[in-house]
Image 1 (cartoon, rainbow over the protein chains, first blue to last red):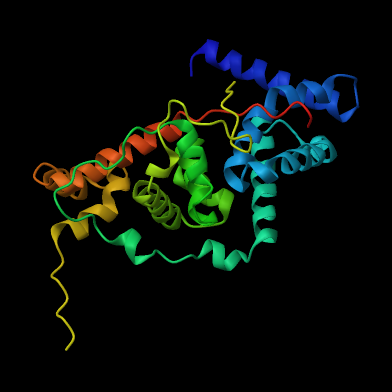
Image 2 (image 1 turned 60 degrees about the vertical axis):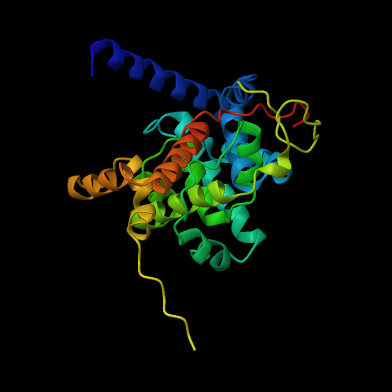
Amino acid sequence: MSSSNSSNVHVLAHTDMALAARCATGEPGGFEELYRLHSPRLFGLACRMVGPTDAEDLLQDIFLNAHRKIRLYKGESALGMWLFRLATNLCLDFLRSRANRSAQMTDSMDAEDARPTEGGRGPILGVLDRLDLERALAELPDGCRQVFVLYDVEGFEHREVGAMLGISEGTSKSQLHKARMRLRARDWQPLGPIRGRRHDPRAFSDERV
Amino acid sequence: MTPEPSPMSACDGIQPRLSEYMDRQLDRIQADQVQAHLSVCDTCRGVADDLDRLRGLASSLGPITPPAHI
């Protein structure tokens, strides 16, 4: 690590600890800053993990929990990562309570997922945009959606995904492949052309930060 | 009379490994096997292209600003 990178890490750690201390002591503006800095990533995670309908309530739970636990933050990881792990755990708790977890997490690799594509076709995906993919994520079984979001969207390694979800690296890899194959096999046609698509107020905001 | 199962094609052995191949998680021998198959199989190459596009699109999904009323 270069000296400039090292000093940046120290500055960030100092900033994180300072912000956590401000939140823990109830200093005015502290928690608002925490929310402003970190809510977009955590809301994105919640939307993709549990769906946009429940994500708003879940985001409030995430920050309520953060408020209760911020005194436990010791600066051993970036504050954003600490919050991300807290949020991931709450997403998983939510999903467990929403449905029978064993049925969700052990959904079998359907024969149609595993069956190789036959014939001489090339790529089947047509024009695809982010909104299409956001909507399609909601249709995935919980187990493979969680892995897809953490690995392909958030960029964690299988080792880290496995640790967060309580599954093996091998299961993480197989769930990821299943997610990708299911998304590929999805019938994208009903979504219609990208240009001129009617606005769906329930859809994800296209606003990105 | 039960029809005889079709013999396993090369694609059956390749497609389940495509994600790991694209993510560079296969060992050299396995990766070479997949690469050799992709060089001669339009079908599997098409699947790989799709998975790669999905992967690229997923990595471009960013944070989402929460509604102001939260």
